[in-house]
Image 1 (cartoon, rainbow, N blue to C red):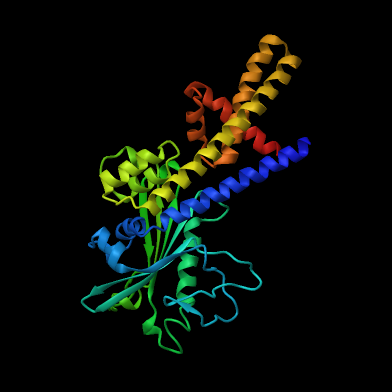
Image 2: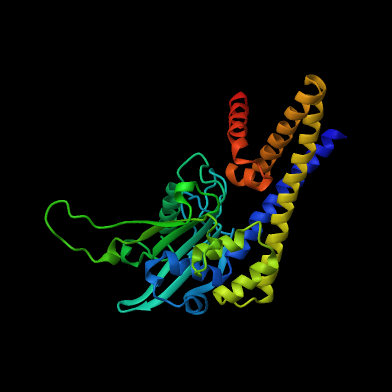
Length: 347
């Protein structure tokens, strides 16, 4: 029975995390939210009005977790809104873009049309540099255009692509930053000037959040911090979106905000409850073995340590945010960091 209970809890926690991630993607895919991101991260749209980007320049409906990333030996010619949807490998498994969409705007040289991808990234250190994955996604969005945007040797028809990564929990040194990586021209010998549109074909952007919701100016960092804050309720989020960012709260958008907040609260409460129960049990055992006084001290520390570990596991938050949320005094934090380090080494 205990095993079944543990398994069922693990499944429920995993389900809630998956539901929360899905809710985040659906909220990010709202055109007005994408418009803020595009205006802040893509040079071609820098001078455009956010509402114009949402209503006039983003084409069709953004695709959410629909389009596979990995390549097959040959791309099929199926086209939806000009994007090849058969972009998967039979052998590498299916990994889908979080959000992918088309955007266009008029320019002096004609119509600029781009393929854009937005990804939400919780773990900044997944075992590889996230920016390399962003560049790979850009490369895939270019190569997948063969047979849809261009055929044979008509490489002039290739559309520019952008992959934008919203990093929820970046390291301290990257908090509240937006960094762009692109192809540029560099003369090594002599001086030439190729038209920019012939080589400026991909841009990877890292948006690193970090609590900028305390700032007053309505920029994209504050917008995303408000959206993904676990400490800000749905009603307050709706108020900030309307008052500070002039975002109309449609029924669809309100529902997406509510759903994401509900799942966020569920993940938080599960972490807290698991930490409390395991901490109490660990404290009881330690107290019986080491005596009342030493046991109480050790139990209290073990209680807090288990709460920290469970919150880290269930929320994915940075260690400093977890300890702040649990009210760990600054003077006590080094011993918990050392204990967590020892635990990781023993495992």
